[in-house]
Image 1: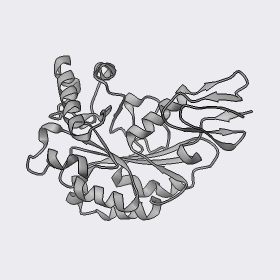
Image 2: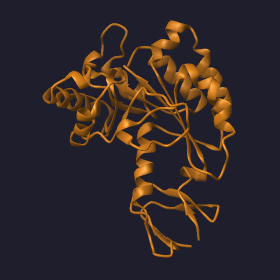
Image 3: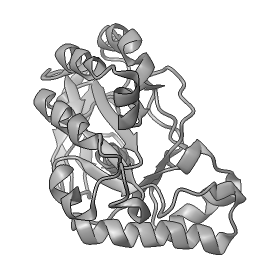
Image 4: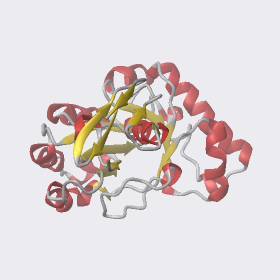
Length: 264
């Protein structure tokens, strides 16, 4: 029996996630367009900017991002690698607390303000309750992250249309393929290219061979895979997690339901 960790929920091999920073008013239009095509994403917010000119308000946040994920971008968007530890801890924890009060769920992810960080910043994150952190260092690939605290995206949305066909034609039955797109919603407005989202949604939305997920859902799924427990011959599998996990067993999709033990 050959087991491979090459499946997302539903037994598919591909996943798509979007990730947008700063909480600008243009998030409203972006979310509406994403919802139209069934796309899901994560919105990294600076709670200290709520209600400022050009930014969303705290009151609209929960409803606006329903079905998506709210995530940390710090209270006031500092250069974290230039900050003392006390300031790093405060701007992350206070942002978490403010966002959690609005979202109604634990906020465990973030993106680095300005995309900058160093080893000292990264080392602090687990103690601050952060389980993943996105960079801006796009790699142009569809690989799963090796380090969730240095999660490099596939591309900025300016390049996403160039990569769509390559994503769709990735070989099946090899490994999980993740298309991770990041940016800022105000860039669509400034560049007058909102049609990019329409073209992405028309090409990649509503497909049964793609898992549409938030950053947190992908991170949680990766952790659930790591927690699977196998017998010595790999024919008994226990899933202690609260989410179902899919694997390949001799090339066939196999679901291990949440909290259950199966025999194959």
